[in-house]
Image 1 (tube, one colour):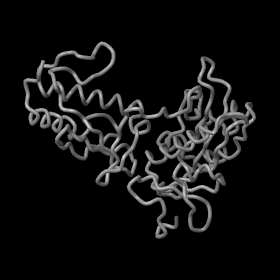
Image 2 (cartoon, helix red, strand yellow):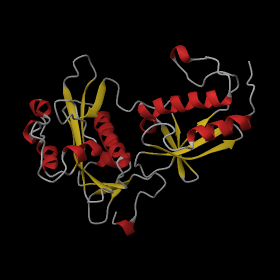
Image 3 (cartoon, one colour):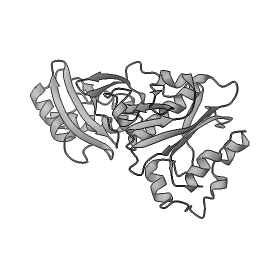
Image 4 (cartoon, one colour):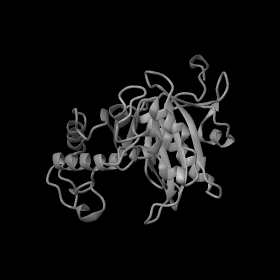
Length: 294
């Protein structure tokens, strides 16, 4: 079964659907949809991430929904507009499930081309990484949530004493002094925890935390990264990578650190002027920028 619509009709339908404000979901901001010889290129911004991203989309070969998986696979659609609407819904789901974080990346013409084909898992097999919840209803340690929860330095929600946050990590033998102090100072950018991926979600095996270095929140500092003895180094690497993704999506242009670990070089960190290491979150920029003090 072939499509009843031309490629131009599909392109116009996708452009109409994806380029308008609020087209996909919160955090998605369209830049362009371009036709190429083998498909369409959807170019967009994601949250406050300084990168410009793109995904390649094939033109439909049949009048079927672009949804894949489950009962939606192969369902007929009756128009290019319906196909574009289904694609927008699929894109929203992909973004919600970490498209930007789990894709392979290739730099092309000033943007980052994302490809999920054969991409490695975000975290190593057998482990899971999540934000440390900051209150009893599971408030995540994202910058937006933190800004709402702790509106001024030194202030804490009465229901969330800093000394109680991350108590389960402390019980597992990890030092939570630094992230707790960052909460009190209203500087915490993110706090992640790693644990064994089983029905109990235990034991906890690692943590990482980052803070905001400047008031504009363009520079984040990796303050802490730790894994328990015997835990694979891949868990540590995954914690660092996810910290970088978290702060980039919150608007950080650079991540700096005084953490002295040669393995950070393999993750993109380079020696900074004045000591320590630094990493640019904009993938199309050089890793070292003397003018910026890195």
